[in-house]
Length: 119
Image (cartoon, rainbow, N blue to C red):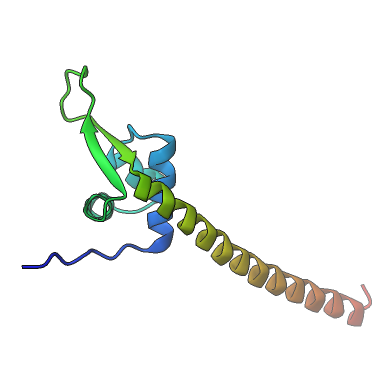
């Protein structure tokens, strides 16, 4: 039976890889808090990233608490993070420009209203 790859939102995918590259010892609970998503959502995403080979998981060898994991980006994960970064930046710039245009339009409208009212 063939494995079905899980689908991950590209922004969440990028942010998980980014956070784990910076802090590989983060717990899933900490990731969930930083990302503002559920613990179940993080667990699903971590499993998907392991399945597609973007991260690997290891225990801290010397830590007596064997439930503490280290999430490491694989070479494939590092390459994918670069691709996701470009896409993330492109999407955010589009959002920024749309928001800036909306703010500019509202400010123009407010100036016009003030000018008509003689203020």
